[in-house]
Structures are given as structure tokens and as C-alpha cells.
Amino acid sequence: MSAPLHRRKPSRRLMALIGVASLAAAGLAVVPLTTGAGAAAVDLAHAALPADDGWAATGSGTTGGQTADTAHTFTVSTRAQLAKALKAGPIGAPRIIQVKGVVDANTDDSGKTLGCADYAAGTGYSLSAYLKAYDPATWGRGKLPTGQQESARDAAQDRQAARVVLTVPSRTTIVGVPGSGAAIVGGSLQVKNADNVIIRNLNLTDTRDCFPQWDPTDGSTGNWNSQYDAVTVRGSTHVWADHNTFGDGPHYDRANPSYFGREYQVHDGALDITNASDLVTVEYNRFANHDKTMLIGSSDKDTRLRVTLHHNVFQGIVQRAPLARVGQIHLYDNYYDTATLNNYTHGYSVNARAKAQVVAQNNYWALSGDRKASQLLSGDGTGSVAGSGNLVNGTVTDLVAAYNAEHSAKKIKTSVNWTPKLTAGLEPAAGLPAALAKKAGAGVLTAAGGTS
Image (tube, rainbow, N blue to C red; front, side, top):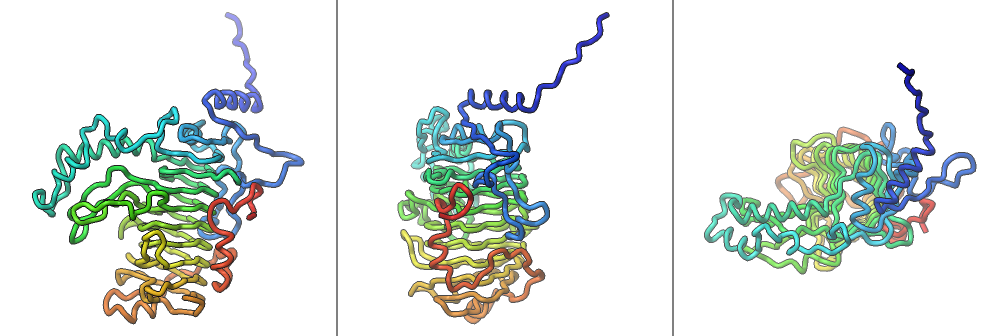
């Protein structure tokens, strides 16, 4: 019997080239990664969260796909390319995905635009039949919809979810290519049970549910509830969302009809952080033209939820900026403009409930003529808001005192059980309106990671 042959392992360079070739064949562009002696300065795609920059800098920090090799570094311009890049290679391998131009999530693999009728086709669902089946006058208000039309609505919603929900794995950076107008329209980036994720420099807009569910038990008059956040962080850790722009345009809520006396709401959250997520930093983003903006904590029994929000702009926001449950939330140097924008009228900014421990420092509120300082906060009587240096129309204001003075019940507490330590860039609030007009949102960052 002859001796076995000893096979030489292929070199890492060869393996990388094989990976590049296979990905190119799959229609994914590969961008070279400059490393080694004489390498160029770290660019936007390879940047990591700076030290001390909020809760996401805790421990090992947040580096996303910084160490991705060439086989896991992509430039994408379509929904199909983005979906392939998110799934390419082994689970957990670091990856960088650069979005160039506008990615429409409501498209098939050939790039054909898909509408609500395409998702409903073959399911038996129709809105007119759904409204007839669950009219409170005949269905009542004491139970959720069941039966053929609810099953058909659920099936149609599942078909849309299969296109628009894009799961982001651990050790991933998704970044808009500077100067390309990078956007994901109608998509929902789902960071679920992941660690070490970066999302930067993207316009994330009009994440719209074609098939909202009627819930007659939601409140005293019922509500239409939709799925899909533009970004949802569930059960995940070390997440950095930076210099993105969130909004509903071009489909603003003013275009929504009403059924059963309630708005047919097709948008859910902009950026929700739930299900025991932890160590999240949200900075230099712009949130505009939206209702239920940011939920931190999915229920009063949620856990962890250490989140930092700083240098964000909230404009034309109705509520939840954020609604915080349970966790330790640090809000500093954010700018809130309460004026109505595109029919989005301010309700409240920050809601502290379910024993949330919020520290609010050096934030600036521009109060429109129809609003009062007492309307900026909300709560259930168990949450706390501490802090100082907050300005309302340029004047130092005790937000909790203003709220509590007009609410005899469910007063907001003023003491918290923790002290923020990760406060990179903390500055006085006075200059925020002018500074953040130039520094926040998508399209500001340059290829090298600075601001233009």
C-alpha cells in the first residue's frame, strides 16, 4: 500500500483570491482593503468608535467589520447585492458593506420594484375585505382579529418582510459611500442577537408596512399597528449608529387615511433598541418627520439597555425621543426642535418609565409658540430624569420641575443610581442649533471619516 500524499494547504492570499472571484461571480463588487506598511490613513469604512464615546465604548469597544479582509469588503447598489453581502462567508466573519447610491428594499432580485399588490397577490388579502370583516360595529372591540382575512393579511406581511427585513450579523460595518447619496429606502436593518455592529452615513427612509394590523384592544378606541423599524436593535451589544438621517419621506403620515376612526399608520419606529440590548451609542444622527421615533425597552420587564444618545437632531418628531424603560440612558448635547414639520406635531420628547434611569445633560430645546416646557417630558411615575445644563430657547430650565408642577400624579423622579463616565465631546448646549445643522445626519462625513 502506497503512502498517503501530503497536500500543501493553499496560501491565505490564494484563499482570498478564490473568495474574491466567487463573490464577483455572485454580482458583488469588492473594494480593496489597504493594510500593512505604508498603508493609508484609516478610512470611513474601517473606522471604529473612539474611546470613551458613550456606552458602546465599554470593554472591547465597537469596531464593527474593521478587520474585514478583501473577500468580505463589498460595495453594493441594489437590494439583492446588499442581501448577499450580509450573508456572504462564515457567520461572524468581519465584513464591511459600503452602500453606494440608493438601495430600494422593495425590489425583487432582478431589481423590479414591488408594491403592496405584489405582496398580497395569491394570499386572498384585500383591504376592503379586511375592513368589512373587522368593523368594530360588527366584530366588536374586545378581541383581536382572527379568521381568513387576518391570516391573509399576516401572510402578505410575511412576504413583504422577506424582502425588506435585512438581518445584520455580528462584526459588521454598513456605511454610506461619501458623496453618493447613500440611502436605503423602505428597508429595515435588523441587528438581532449580534455583537459589534456599526451603521453610518446612511439615509434611512420610508420604512413602510403595506399591511398594518387592526387592534381594537389597543387603547380605548383601538389602533392600527405596523411592523418594521428603519433600524431595530434586538438582543444585541456594542452597536454604534452614527451620522444617519431617519425619516418618513416621501410618504409622510399626512397621506395616511383613517379607518375605524384611527389613522392607518404604516410606519413604526425609526431606531428601536429592545430585548435586553446593551452598550449602544447613537450620535450625530438626524431624526425628522416621524411619529414613534425611538423605543428603548420593549416592555417593563426588559433588561440591560445601557444607551448613549448625543449630538443628535430631533426635528418634526411627535414622540419617543426616546421612550426609555428600565435602563441607564445618557442624553447629552442633543438638539430638539419642537416646531411642526410636514404635519408632524410635537407631543413630548423624553419619556422615562419602568424605572428607567435617564441622565439628561446640556441638551437644547427650541420651543415653538404652541408648546410649553412642561410638555417636553413624560413618564409613568417610576422613571427618573437627572442632569443639568439643559436649555429651552436659550434659558437654563429644570425640565423635571416644569413637568411635575403641572402633573399631580405620575411625577418624574429626580435621582438616578449611576453616574455617566463615557462622555466624549460633552459641551455646553448654547451652540448646538448652529453646530448640529452642519454636523449631524447623513452626507456630512468624508471618505477619511471626518466632516466636510
